[in-house]
Length: 304
Image (cartoon, rainbow, N blue to C red; front, top):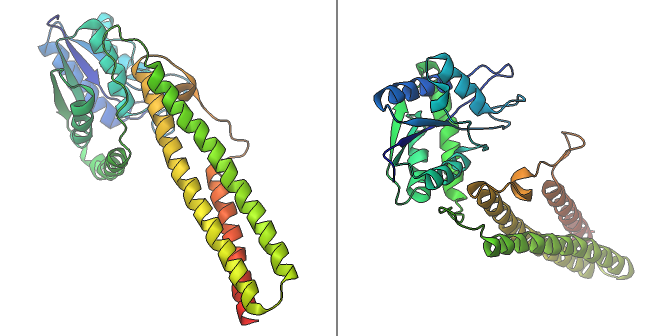
């Protein structure tokens, strides 16, 4: 293994005109100081595109790279950057680079409020690799807002943590694991379609049965039973949807970690109208309306 450390520079945000935020600038300044201290170190700027940090037509890491070179860093000491959109993806891209090039250690550069999440990920992604974290001080006018956003991001990460297959030098792409997760996605498609179809069919049968039945109590009982069945189908749909989200995320992280831009990492669905809900949200609305109608008619039948 070489004695060359890799400085992993985490980005932050840039404006629509490509101007880096003050938080990003503070991180870049720490990276510049580290490059001066470690004459053989090389820096990897992170970040590509994302709604929350970069909506321009250039990758975020290019703005970090420009800042470094404009402040005296030699171009040869700054890598091109990662094709990533969040902290975990940044780390997965960096791991592949470290394993392929046998860097001696990784020095992560980020802000003080962000460092707990970075350490959390590093402990899981960089097992067996020496690393440290250098913190940049966040300007006082930004710190409270950044802490609030960071808490939400960190809590979400811990709730939804998925450990993907970790890249090793010259490791083949884990086809078996990838195929298993894609099967989970296909299973969700089948079950969710069945749940939605079942809700519509069952509701139709119930209304038809109610129309031909006599007595208020039998009608109310049938309608409420239908609402209960639809609620159970909604629970099944939600559990399958959660499993599918995990599968898609695992697929995406595997593709990014192994440097293979497949379907999951490249998928960017086009929305016809921004105000339209996602398919999953639309299905929830459908279930809610159907269940509400059944319960309402059940109550009216009981009191009528």
